[in-house]
Length: 207
Image (cartoon, rainbow, N blue to C red; front, top):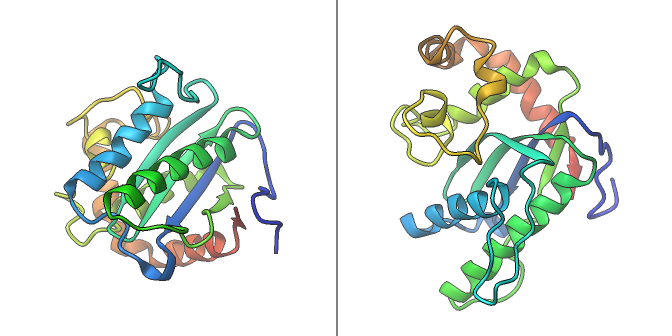
């Protein structure tokens, strides 16, 4: 097993499928404010302009080092697809993201101790032809995926836009949002590929 906090395959210009969940299957997103907090943290760390805290100190900014390509936040876990431009960026980004969320959650719910089951798992995507399928895998996680608020699907369908989420790399492989939506809608025909993705993620580096 890789050493804790060390990414086994830390490569620039590469895609990673990232997964994290609450320890002991803890529900880590309990109400709408918790989900919105995670979206706010995406914006904090991935927007073009640096964000400062109440003391005027800038939070880390990863805008030019990493792209968030897709995400789905569920009550007890989350999936992300990221494109790492610069080595080490994903590890730093995930440390910032999960540390900030843990501090928020523990303060809000008056608890202490680790929030997550390990830090997260990250699987290097060795074949770029998988990437569009991984976004589909991520987007259909919720049973009500067509209406689900806390995934990147609305960004792919051009219903919402934000600079911290970058669907362009995937949408360039389709004629437009309608074709992508049709592709996602056919997800039940791709069970074998889902099994491959689950296997790769299960064997990803534990960070």
